[in-house]
Image (tube, rainbow, N blue to C red; front, side):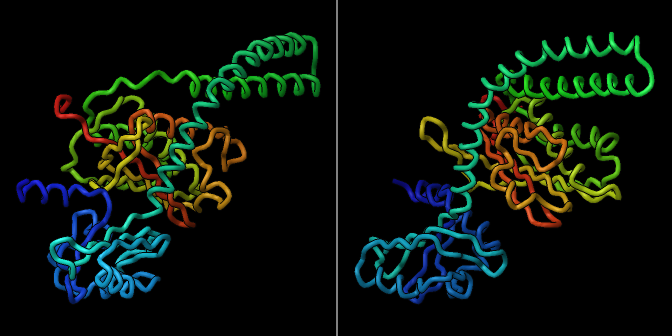
Length: 358
């Protein structure tokens, strides 16, 4: 096979990878490794690997053993950092190069990515399992509520004072429950996406303009776009619904004095998601909705995409479950990282196929 083929294979590896020479200096690093270490290959080549790669395990001893024995070695669940970014828990694989045994290939698989993808698949399954229950509840409850509302309105015609306040309360609460059930029906009856090539920034601009004059009027919305992003393959209306929901969550998380929401886009070629058939597909188009609110409660951070889980007293717990369902049906991935003062919802989407380009 040609050298070009192997160069393409090296660049396409979905996990950070680097090769070190006999002196443990970095000889080569792939694009995913550059992203992971937040540094260019040019600046890393020739540098002592342990000056640039910080691991809370004696990997220098592991490298010596691989050179001596000529066999691969696996080191699982270790913190790996570059000094430029916080450490990430990884599974690390080391292997001697066949034609150059003093050269060692190091592969780093961030466990965070695998964990979040697994959690996303669980959320998708939970969302589907809740659909039948949601539709049944909506159908069974809405009809009796209509009767209760009508009866309360009839009673109020012959009442006065405190009694009218009670019937008004019955009507108001019944209508509130009906609105909740309409959201449940929306969750259960979402049509399959009508996908085509979509410019992400067009969708984001529509969502931003709507938010700026409505629910996020008290917030400052900042854009940080990568203008070179290719189109994604999506249902524009459903994608708009996702972004509006995330912007509304960010606005509601802020106090009344406001705050800042950042909408960021960028390209990250290393991410893959697993499809139901076991194949893996690239999701390089990244959209982040970032707010400076108080963050998610610790007990909700891992369950925020589950149906009927909400951190707000009046929340239904369906908004983010619906978001997760839509993104999953677009062969994408959604995750959240949250600490006080910074919450990041990140959407990862595929690039539109060439026969569906704009």
